Length: 556
Ligand code: ADP
Ligand code: MG
Image 1 (cartoon, rainbow, N blue to C red):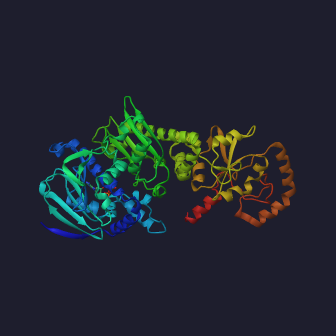
Image 2: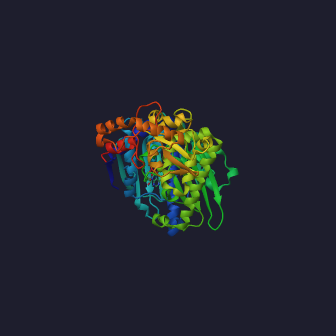
Image 3: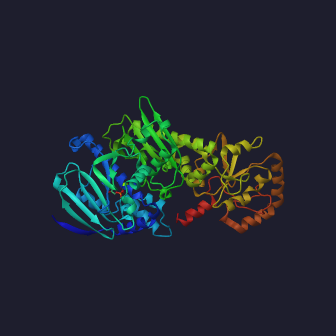
C-alpha cells in the first residue's frame, strides 16, 4: 500500500518545541493526555451509537488499554472508541486546528515564557507524547468503516510525518510511543500504573493493564486499574479532597489545585448533578476574552458526554468556572442550536450561576485570604457580571472589594457592606473616586473635603470600574456617587461659607473664565477642596478623565 510523507504545519513544529521543553518536569503528563484523548474517543463513539447502535454491536464494551514492551522499548495506549479516518488524522494531528491555539502561540512568541501551566491549556495534548518518545506511531480505524480503511501515521516530531493505508481488524486508535533512550522508567508496570492512578482514576471507562510477570506484561491477564466511575455521580461523602482535586486538574488542564468547588444533586421534576470548580489562578486566555476558548465545562446527559457547553451553562462573567453538568432529562440527540433555546437548560444555567455565587459567598465569609487570591485573579471578570447579570447584581456587588480611604493602603479589602457599616449618622451615599492608578485615586484633590469630614471614599482604579459603576448606581438602598461628578452636597454651615467665598472670589472667577474661555464649562468656588487651590470637576454625565483619555487614545 502507498506511503506518503507530509510536512507538519509550521505551528505544529513550534508547539512541539514548546511542549517538549516545558513539560520536562512533568513528563508523565503524556499519559494523562493520551488517556484523555482515548476517553474522548470513547465518549464520541458512545454518543454516535445512540443513533446508530451497529457501530458498537460487535464489541460493545468501550475501554482503554495500556501496555509496554521492554524489548521494543515502547508504551502503547489503545482505545476502541471512534477512531479516525485518514482525513481526520491529517486534520487533527498534522495541524493546529483551533484558532485559539494560534492566538496563544502568537502571544507566547513575545515576552511570555512558556511554562507548563500554560501549555496545559493549549489543547496540544497529543504532542506531549514527544516529551518521552522520539518516534510516535498512530494506528487507527474509524468505527463503522471497513477493515481496509485503517491508517498508520508515524513521526519523529521533527517536522514531517508519514501516512500509510493499512488493514485493521478492530476499530479505534492505538498510539505507540517509541521511548527516548533515557526514559526507561516508563517501561515498568508500577510507573505507568502510578501515573494513571494519579491523573486518570476518574476516567469513566475502564483503563486496563496486563499483569506484570518478570518485568514483562502478560497479555493473557488484564486488570482494571482505575475506579471507572464518573466522579460526580458518586455521593459527596465518598469522595476525598484529593479525588476532587485530581479530577479538576484533568478537567481544567491545570497543574494547580482548584480554589474551591461545589457538588450538588438536584432531584425533582428536572434532575441534574453539578460539580463546579473555581480555579486558583486565571488561565492564560481568560482576559483575552475569547468565547471560543471556553472549554472545561462539560455537559453530560445520563453520564454520556454531549459537548463542551460553557456558554450554554454559565454566563460569560463566570467563564473561569470549570466542571461538569449531568442532566437526566434532556434528549440525547440535542444539538447546540436546540440547547440554546432549551427552557430546561435555562433553568440549569440559573442553578449553576446560583451555585457558583453561593460558593463564592461562602469562601468570602469563611476563608477571606483564599477569597483575596480569587479576587486578585478573577475580580475584574466578576465585575462584568454587574453589567451582564442584572438579576444577580446585588449578590455580585456584595462580593467585590475595593481600596478605600479607610482601608489598608492599596489592598482591595473593603466591601460595600463594610463601608455601610462605618457610615456616619445621616449618610445615605457611598462615595467613590475613579482614576487609572491607586496612587492617582488616593491623591485626588476631590477627596479632600470628604476626608476632612471623616467620610470614607472608595478608591477605584481598575479599568473596568468606571464602566461597571455606570450600571451600579445603588447598593442596599444607598446611592453610589462619584466624588468628581456634579454638585457637591453641603450642610447649612458650609453653604453659608461658600456663598460668602463666592462673593469674595467673584472678580477672580471672572478673570479665570475669560482666561480659560470655552475650554471649561464653568468656573465655581468649590467646597470640595481643603488643601489644593483648584481642581477639575465633571458634570454628572461627563466621562471620567482617564476614561476620556482612554477613548481619545483609541481614536474615538
Ligand atoms: P484535544 O484533545 O484538546 O483536541 P489533542 O492534541 O489531545 O487535542 O488531540 C487532537 C485531536 O486528535 C483530538 O481533538 C481528536 O480529534 C484527535 N485524536 C487524538 N487522539 C485520538 C484518539 N485516541 N481517538 C480519536 N481521535 C483522537
Ligand atoms: Mg486531548
